[in-house]
Image 1 (cartoon, one colour):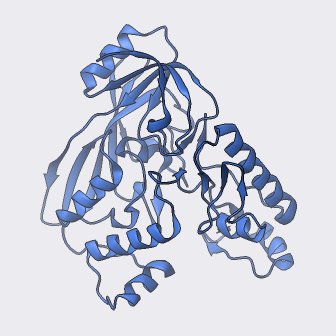
Image 2 (cartoon, rainbow, N blue to C red):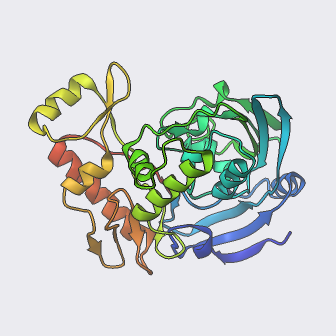
Length: 337
């Protein structure tokens, strides 16, 4: 376990942004993590997982601790359900494929989302009608202040749309080390409610899809719309889909009757941010080394040598234009560092 100085983070963030860490260390066990925290109590610390949901706009003047804990196991099961524990450093997509290979259901709609397992509860990641909170049971985390281990139940995580207690009330106070999911072993709750999935399955003449076929459909859809971060730097969806009160949305909808929306509750609707950005003329636009992807307006990209500040400037331009045009504020889903 070696602490390195002036360490490049270019290959530790999916945007591929060149930024330096004052100090950097990768930890592979909870013992290593607690030892590093104990030995560096006075140092500023920055916790790094898969680097998939952040935009680095500057060098990190801190000790960057890369959580590289690996391993997964079945901790309990019955005829209908299985409880699976994954270490925080496991790649999310590989973990999803592993569960599907065991015929465990619940995560298939979230195939190919970049990042590691440990950061999934922080964002309450989701896709195609499912979210982490749907199968989440608990997570264990190291308390930064005193190195105690604490277990958070689903209720204690205060999950919301791309929100959790870890992004808000206890931000930077805990480091997630393991996550437990409750998955189905039979009578899987197959979710094909999104049109893209329905169309992809129909294209392949699949009427009663298996978990693997749902996963394959999601992978095909994502690959057709989203660039591979290994080939084109990006962080997936940069913005959240705004949720509006119906009473406010109705006024906007009268002015823009073609605006797409989805009911969230009796009082709220969700508007696709990608639709708003595309209508505002940003889809496919390039500004030097940064831009908006040609197939998905939600995705900002680094064409090779963009700085985080350049991408941030584009994101602010998009936000201001959307608000000026539609009267709707869209928030960044990505963490701005």
